[in-house]
Image (cartoon, rainbow, N blue to C red):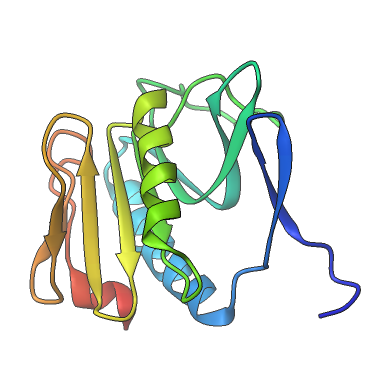
Length: 168
């Protein structure tokens, strides 16, 4: 991997290098993004962005995290082209895909940052056990197994998908 530029995030004013996501990570992210995009095509609620799109979670010193997927309702970001710079508003939903080298301690710290910044719910997808870990801003975390349904009540209408489908 020599010569490849590292992926980075800005954490409290410091640039932190991260390895590029591996193919399985990208496959899961794409699958979830596809399912959400199809739903949003039929239900005019908002938009989903991917590809580690920057989310500002803190200012002075700044922190900009790269979310695997993020959902912005039209209530937070009106219809029309998104700006080319980072937005001051945070998304309602962030979905992160756990990589094999991700430590839960670090993921929980990132989840906490998102929630403190105003994200309504963070979902961490864990490919190993094919589970979805939900961290809502207004209640305790929960874990969904492969046979459970992932929903986002109050945010994504009647969107629902079996967790196992996210990993197929």
